[in-house]
Image (cartoon, rainbow, N blue to C red; front, side):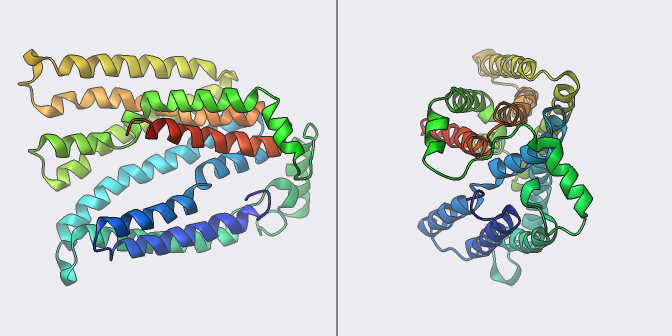
Length: 323
């Protein structure tokens, strides 16, 4: 859709849809209604992650992408970190207010936060350099500069069936999609808030504790992402981060397995939290692989959009295979 609808319009519109559906989630009466709402929320947010990386790849050179992608991804992780604090505060102070459960108030507050940000996006979010004409913070000289610094090596194509041929006859789509799907699976345990689910399953923790404790794990992910992103821009090497990620996942997996041995089961559950923090360090692979794909496909912006979208698509396909 970003090839058809300007990103400065598409992203805020999808954010508004997502925000309205979030409000609707506060009024559901059964799980089937929530499933339906989440389905449409998934559609509205599907382009956000890969679309933003596509926009970043349109504005920045390979040696600049790592830090920018890292800042974007870390912002999302920071939202996850503060959401735990927000959830605990909402449950503690709004539970039962006006006859609503705390989790219903959480959806209402999320919607209130979302909509102003969406309208803010109409004002400040740019298109790609070749079509950015509306944002107030760039003058004509700056627009021309942003386009010239990247467009010299880009081949522009019209949207046609030739795109399918270019994508399917090159290795980029296959290689990037497979690498992202497999690497994403290795660290998905640390990135999908399974720690909160684990604490709920073993029992003995209050609702506030289940919300608070995973925040520490997320903080490790933020630090790792920013450090690795800056390092890749400085060295221009992406692959060592994947080796680092595999090392973290392997060490964490071994520690988790050992912690389940009979001789260690009498230890308190929070003694296993460091293992999950190590696992969260591997979150940096997302931004590294997206930056890498942007760099590899820099000469064809249409193929770049397809490759980035496919990477996330196959990641979720692999993830669903476990259920």
